[in-house]
Amino acid sequence: APLQLQLTSTSAYYTYLLLLLKSVVYLAIITFCLFRRTEVCGDGKSS
Image (cartoon, rainbow, N blue to C red; front, side, top):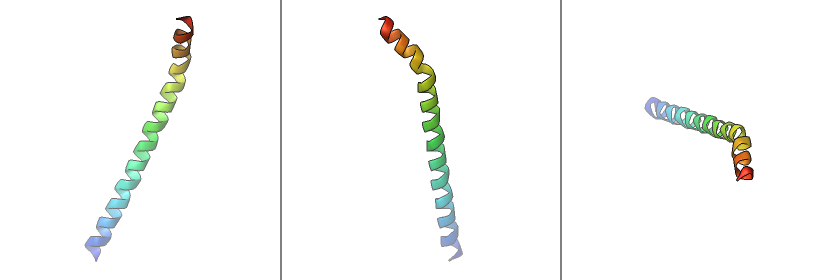
């Protein structure tokens, strides 16, 4: 039983960690796009 409990706890921990990492990456991409959008839009309109 203790082994199963530890396994479940570790699995939940990694799942939470993965979700957190995904959120950070998602936010980073959104922020990057927001900062780059003005330049990209400007280049697109000029050409």
